[in-house]
Image (tube, rainbow, N blue to C red; front, side, top):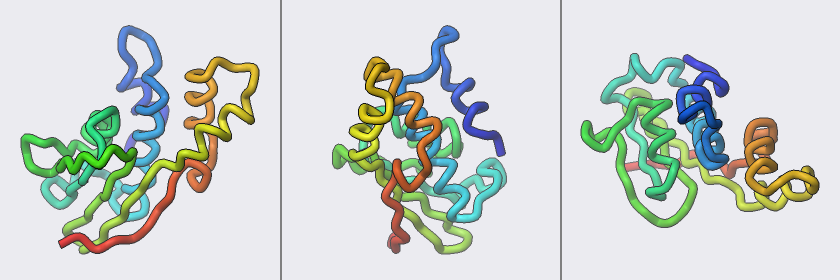
Length: 142
């Protein structure tokens, strides 16, 4: 599977890096795939379903990293206004919900006070440990 920088490059437009939310979402996907034991999403077509809880940048990153799409019914939208998603490995009957922590935004401003807000978020989302960025919980999906 590709790494974070590969996906960031793929999400770049006109040579500009993607917005911080895309970076956060890409990392969320990579973390989820690791936890539900999917090394290569291309090998798990139709055995991976993702339920996103926002219609903002998260679905774009999910489609980029996992290949799940609304059109093939492997990407579901339950808009609750949260930067969160549930990743379901149908083959192993495992599901994990990952939600972005709001505290990461605050921490980025503290860690990088001299940087412009979006630049600070971009840097933070690239390097902060997963524990600082996300709340992770195993769930059951019926």
